[in-house]
Figure 1 (cartoon, rainbow, N blue to C red):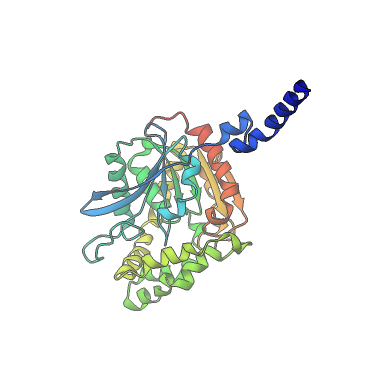
Figure 2: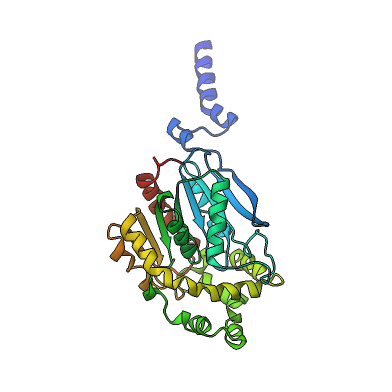
Length: 326
């Protein structure tokens, strides 16, 4: 009888003990449970201007430089950064006039793509970084490509997402901006004022997206708060004007692609009216080995296609960048 009771007690304790001490996991499941990545929010003073940047990942890891577009900031990479930073040292700056960086008066500070490239260059030098892969999107493309022309040996790879380097990519959306390039009258300048209004900001996130429930309204609320800061309209209008200085550099960008042949991944939202799909395919003329993925989404592809893009980006970096030096 005592033996029977003892066996029963062992069986009961064996059955309930996992519940008493909390859930149990198989050994392989426990290995998957990793602590969250810590993202640091920092700034450096460059040319007298506070330049904000997000930074995450191992200090000795290969560097990935994330360059944002208009009208957003490093905020656009908030969900991608943790998916890379276990292995890669990720740096995502805000240009002056965007996000958390300073926005000095446009009459006292040169809001140009050349100046932005120089400031990003200085930031990376201050961080002790002399080799990096670049993710370029929208405005990030001319900033990054100007940086590549300055230091072609420093670029280990390119990830291109709706970032233009070919005239085929400047279609109907750009017509009033091209008019402004040719004649910077006050009339032509003010004709572009609608591009900094809420309806346009929201349009950039929602147009061409099939499932709008995947797009957080926080995006346009966040970006519009920056655009609505006193003086920011003039900052953005100055940049619309200066974007015209990028187009004459397209042949140099393309020559860089052909001569240096950086490993390149192209992930492009095909429904984007600002940088449409026509701007993606010409890259293959100069980078025939580039990996191209045309996605069924709009301008800010990371917002609804991160689940498709992150594995592509991670696989690309692991194959081409993982063993590069910092």
